[in-house]
Length: 71
Image (cartoon, rainbow, N blue to C red):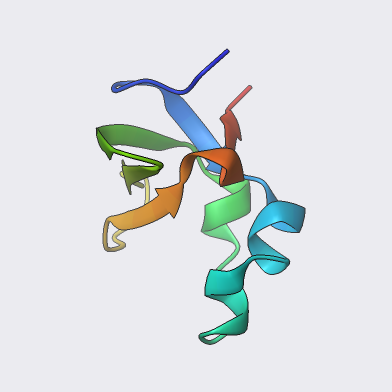
């Protein structure tokens, strides 16, 4: 099922760590990306703007295929 605006998601660690984005930047990702729910605020093309509201963190653009439903 595709991710849509308002969905609660988390980042798939394996897909993010093996991505082009990870290889092009600092690969030390904070644990909240994988353990805390984030809300999809906007979607543009293949990317979703995700807000992690439980902790004071910046919003982040992530590829849709790097996200999974938060259970």
